[in-house]
Amino acid sequence: MALDRLEAMRAFCRIVEVGSFSGAAESLGLAKTTISGQLQALEALLGIKLLHRTTRKVSPTTEGAAYYARARAVIDDVDELEASVSQSRNVVRGRVRIEMPSPVGILFIVPALPDFTARFPEIHLDIGCSERVVDLVQEGVDCAIRGGVVADQDLVCRTIGQMRLCFCASPAYLASAEPIHTPADLPRHKHLGFKFPATDRRYIPTLTRGTEHFTLDHPPSMYFNNGSATAAAAVAGLGVAFLPRAEAEPHFRSGALVEVLPHWQMASMPLSIVYPYTRHLSARVRAFADWVTALMASDPLWSQLEKA
Image 1 (cartoon, rainbow, N blue to C red):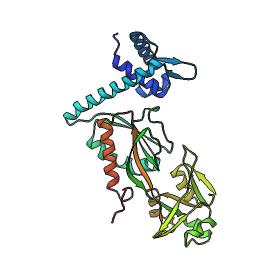
Image 2 (cartoon, rainbow, N blue to C red; image 1 turned 135 degrees about the vertical axis):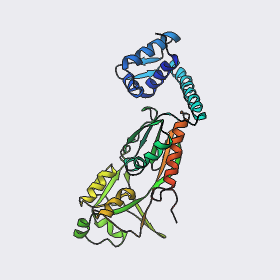
Image 3 (cartoon, one colour; image 1 turned 45 degrees about the vertical axis):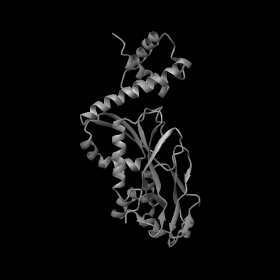
Image 4 (cartoon, rainbow, N blue to C red; image 1 turned 90 degrees about the horizontal axis):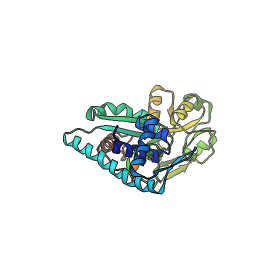
């Protein structure tokens, strides 16, 4: 069988990006033997060794690294060319792999997806919802929604919204504890802290009312690295929690949680969509990015600006 050079280049690029044959095979939906055969045929065609192979990892040779840079650009150009031809017929198609924080995905984006699929029926989404920060290039992710300040200089970052937060607790906890009239009362209470999974760094909440500011730097009684787990702990009466307002509101309506200090505002967490500088923004990724930006702008719980 004749070598499909473009597919062999695609396989080689994925091996370099994920650092293994098995990872590349999984991300491309191919058998590991197929990937290995494509790489061997490509090396034979070029007459050079593209990869160093050890029992622990795979890495490009000097020639392989140079070939990867050019091959990646060629593949991106071909993908964009195909997308532009489809777009000329008002069709955007292909797979988009996205990672996002669980509260954003579960509470906001996934419920709105019928609108996206109606607009772009030939775009196939592969969505991951978790609190971990993925390596977009290594894991073959097209774009991600990130909360907080994005410090990675290798990523293009577009702020698209805000995750609004609030303090809350269960009625049972509040009935058994001292009253909370002002933020200064909070250090006398059990409160549930949040740590970012990627850095293990604690999030320290700040409350404001006009020109007044209060930072709750008192040690929490428990830590969590997942918003849903924090909500469950608050409902169970384990203490005062700060949650995304979108996650807390169903519990407010059911009576499982009560908002604490409602006349004070917590600092919101900015939400951004990011993608690698090394990746050309394809029509299908742009379609998702533009859609989610408009979606957040239309919802007062998530928009960048407060609604009047």
